Image (cartoon, rainbow, N blue to C red; front, side, top):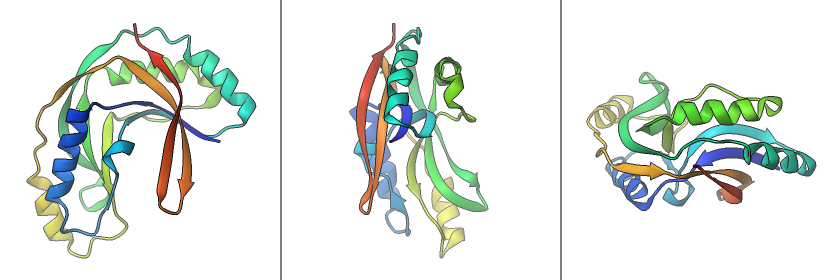
Length: 173
């Protein structure tokens, strides 16, 4: 099964994400449905059923305090000249939580981390200049929220898009 570890988002953050997506409706973007939005801490990829048991045991050992965070910034991957992913940033000690989770899962791999919420993806921008102008004019509202848990999630890829389900939620101290 395809797994990742993520932080869920409150309704206020999802509403802000939907507002920003609305500003970009005129472009050929594949928008992420708000109910699927999250901040990925660690993408684990394909794992066997037996590995899930070990992953859950390791994640239960994470001892991190809950923290306050806020929406901060807006950007793109890989760069402004070749936009493939549009995201909204999140500020807070996400990198500390990432380090603790990835260290706990050292035998399951890790990757570079950037605390962001993916809003949309695109393969090709027919009007790159107009898209760039629109993106540079977007300013997310600085919404504050509390992070009190993280989740081990399963992703099933279907023709209509990914379907996520929570395997286990882990409370922060």
